[in-house]
Amino acid sequence: MPLPPAGDTIAAIATALGAAAIGIVRVSGPAAYQVADRLFRPRRGPPPSRRPAGRVVHGYVVDDRAAGTPHEVIDEALLLTFRAPYSYTGQDVVEVQTHGGPAVLRTVLDLCVAAGARLAGPGEYTLRAFLGGRLDLTQAESVMDLIEAQTDSARRNAALGLSRALGEQLDAIQSDVTQAYAALQASLDYPEEGVPDAELGVPLTRALSQVEALLATAEAGRISRHGARIALLGRPNAGKSSLLNALLGFERSIVGDTPGTTRDYLEAPLSLGGIPVTAIDTAGIRHAEDAVEASGVRIAKQIAETSDLCLLLLDRSAPLDPDDMALVGELTPARTLIVASKADLAPAWDAGALTPPALPVSARTGAGLATLGTRLRERLLGDASGSELWISNERHAQALRAVASHLAGARDASPDVASLELQDALDALGRITGRTDVAEETLAAIFANFCVGK
Image (cartoon, rainbow, N blue to C red; front, side, top):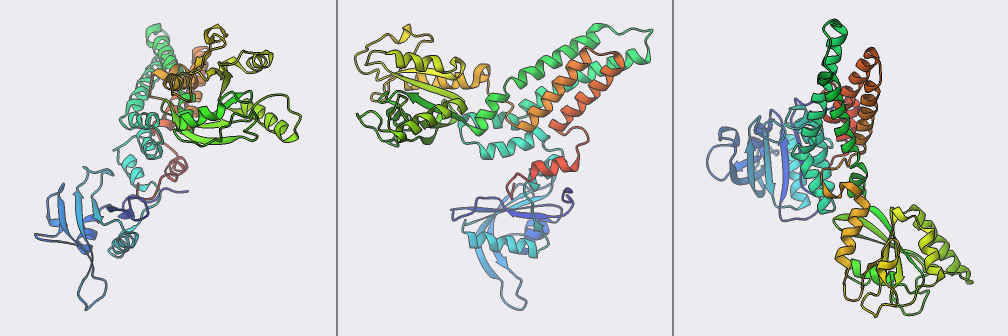
């Protein structure tokens, strides 16, 4: 798919569809002010094209398309004006702020097109910002991440990307790889001079270490963006449904004193420790004669195998028995967090005596829920839990894996092969930042995921 031309003038509704107090139609391109002159009448003073940039102008959107008739007033509006290069796209930009009714916004957009603009494609404004040097490719993709962020952790990670925190780290890596490549080329061109290891090996090792550190955050980035699946497991009446309701803050799952109340599984989305999570309340695990209950037990075990993390609930108010310990032994320790439920009741066993220790939690009083959220975050994010700059984009992760592979190959290769490996590493870095020649197909695929108007 070819990139759309950047020299014409585009228009789009930049706010979400549906009734709202305010709606915005954004126009960008060399004819943006001519479009504004055609459809916007200031309440007083000269037309938009004859005013200084950076102003907010009060007036009216009018329809002058019917020749020989008075202009129809569409809405009272504000006009925001920006002159190139001091705008989001780096071009002349005007934004028409009207009331947010869908009919009003559609009419304003039609007037923009009638005045010479064309409808913008998905992500075309941000694409123009990238092509105009206002954003690098990591910042451009962070714009979409920020729009789609569902939790504070995802929002902060996207904001860091937009601030060029990721771009600066990639710049440092690219600088080291370039330094190593230049030193290697010098050694090939002038072998009699010799190249100190500090000019070749040191930046190469430093770059590889930085790439590996970024890749170590990829799993945390994936979870922050797409969420994690957490299975609530345990024997009947262990308190799984009560814990789910406590985490949600409302009654979502049926709770009863009769063991086996939950016969199927139930999914509920929530945020724990700033991480988007789908919690799955499963049937109590025990030997079941009833075919329906046996099916629920089988499904519970399947869910446990495919979840990112399992919360194994053991009733702290009742003595542990062999079936409880069998459950502890069946689950993978690295993917399991043991919860000593019903911590508001008199304990029948010591939560700290288990290996690993169980976390006391009371769904009734809320005791231990905050600690549980922290422990879940630490377990899901691993070493990346103390940082918020994560590789959350799979395209970035794939490119960084290629960089790491090429750098490792260069470290152990002959000079001729190492030179090729470093070239490939630089190309892979360029695919992330867009600072080298990037195929039009790659750019079109990235910006096609954006919403129209951004």
